[in-house]
Image (tube, rainbow, N blue to C red; front, side):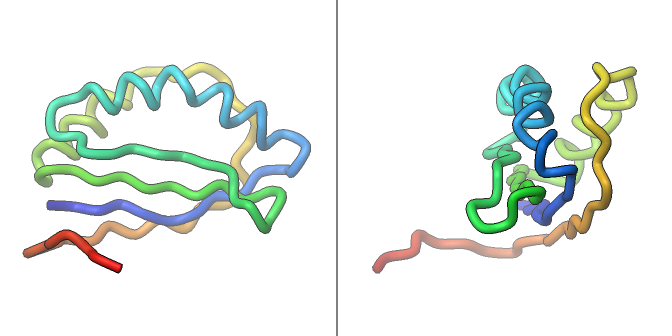
Length: 97
């Protein structure tokens, strides 16, 4: 399993426009084979920050998704910077509080 997580920054006044512009691609990605979760969401503390979280069954599924993303996308507000990390997960189990 892979987790891709991180953050991106946009001008705070354009954050909602960015999130709205991504909605269709989020829905499409969640329906792709191997996608277990895919979220880009507004950060509750920093006005210009969006948080990214993806969970994939395998590297191959993620690679297929990234290859499909090579097609031209609709224009969105400019992303000012991103910090994204990929994690390879060997095992997982439910977390109980």
